[in-house]
Length: 319
Image (cartoon, rainbow, N blue to C red; front, side, top):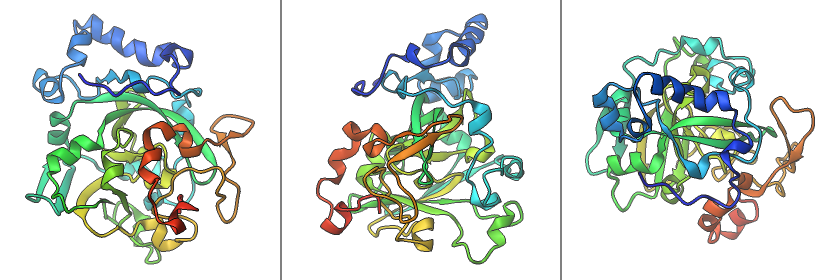
């Protein structure tokens, strides 16, 4: 299995990772006669062996986020998912989402458009576990152990044309289930996008699980995006459509308020939101704020993508 180099900001896993979270599952597997070798099997091999694709090896390059892990109790009950309401307490309402038989449509500028079932997609992927930081534009943050696969692997399956410059993603549209989607003033379905360089970056991650479990519905089951150097609203949830295009997508929050929630949305403590400072953040469960880092601390992996932006974007590149 090939892993990216260990970045300079990563600390030893034992420094912050709670032992019960990551070792207990492996003890259970060992008791069943399933060792580390099986965990390292490619996705298709695991599927054929009858092992859940959630059982993924830790990627050592992301074994630690340099901060304390956020408890599952906190992170799973403080969620933005506007399809189910505008408060942070939508975890129960989100359970209405039915992910059985979920499919993802892939189209646009690709060799051939197709639709793939979520389970089939999982079977083609080599799953891994990562501990990464998440920074909300609202100035709160958390650290979560995600399970999933690099977005770049999905791009390879999609086979986009060389002329494609962006990847556009959309969330499901079902007002009978997500009652907030009945509100005409929201530009449903939720839409987000990345440049192809961003999509192929090692940090762009398709999340299918958290805390060693299938992805919580309030987190965006069955599959969401996570781009840890960007503000959280860029991490679209419950994806069911992916399109490759040569036109920059107009994202959900950009359409609503482009002066506040722009396409680039990279974490930058020196560029304030028009209504509050971005210099600090409050980790969930903490009592004191901590300084926010440029690119959320992931500059080593992503800074080189933004060296040639137009001046008007470069000055406020989060917008």
